[in-house]
Image (cartoon, rainbow over all chains, first blue to last red; front, side):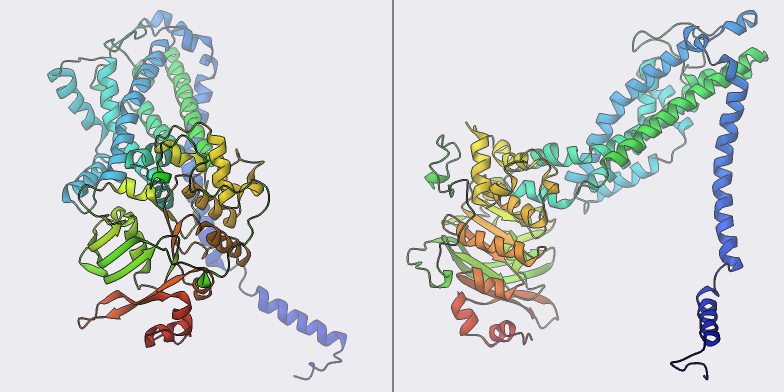
Length: 309
Length: 298
């Protein structure tokens, strides 16, 4: 090349710069590259758009019912009083059911996870069978759990259509989620921590209780909150368990009748009066806010305690 | 063994090295290879020890005697079973599903694998320091206090015990003002000394070290090696190392392991030679030992 002398003219240097520039930029903005990125963004948009649409619609429709009436007043069956109706019994019912569900499914789920992670010998067939079944249970439709609850817990055991029946059924429903999430959390605790504890003469129980569980709490809390938020939004199994009945009082014991927010929404939507429709929209907003708060808490806990070693 | 009685109310009257809090650990011990060890009674005796994982025999036929207050180095290429042997000495191998030990490992004459021996008690008396520093995600103080607490010791003055353990591990001066901060904020070398201090806190007689310096820089390594000299006054130390200079520097006796291939084509770890470190590194009896220590590994 004639221009590559040590004393190249400015023109020749400019030529080189142009060539280098061309070599370094030739593959930019290839159509496939751009297209792929656009496709990905579109998919994200679809997922997000529906959420936005749902929230906007519910907010728009229920906006002027989002006031104290919502949680101060009881539901009403009479159309003449539709404007004053609230969903207090559904809110308290939800708190009762979800609180009890947490009390039942968290200890049982975490204990199961501890057994499977820390005690179970994976080479045994029955332990592998247990694992497989837990995975399968996580995929069983919730209505099936409702049928089980109706037949076994409400009828055979005779607990009836009560808060405790609903809590037991919802616990069974989210138990696989709790177990799986807790196992992941326990598995994320480094083996070296266990070994350090054993090497000092700790028993298995001491090692689990004092090292593994505390280190796994953030992960387990995250999983627990996500599982409970699923239980919170669940309506299908409760339809079979008496939650659809018209309830104008707050539950006061495990054996009270009850209703929950999702069920209440389901009932209100069916009513012809516009006031009931608006109330349903307001209840949807309330439910969404609770769900978002719970999920934010889960994310917050996860970020706060991530990567401690 | 009375000096290791956990219920001993006078915490200072033990074999734990109670150096004053101030001042770094100084090397007061002559070259260990020349040190007088006439009275080194056997602490651990291995007779025909083989360790298997499932059907695979990782190490076979190991015979060796580990003497009191000696530093014994286990060296050899990867896969020769030296870590496996080390872990069998305090029954840490029990934690690996399918691991089995054949032969006899005796601790002061007591078979460690006898039916009535509880591995929990074995590990208290034969402590272990791991390759990667593994402090608990707790404060420095709680890391040290963990052992005595889980063992249910009634410690009249836990602060003194913590200080004593940290001093013995040559860490006290560096951490005395931040005992309540997380152990994970320490440097790698400090973390490893913390792990040693944590082991010392439960007053073991033997300390097993599984490549304790392989994750550390040379300065931190030097500190740990100095510490090992110091600790060998009170403890019996067995160390696995990939670093032959380290074995030569710190140990009194060296065991060279290698992997042998049997007629079926399966590799098994074997103990090739076990002797005074001086002898192993200057005049080994076996050709394979010489090849390995001179870098002509075959």
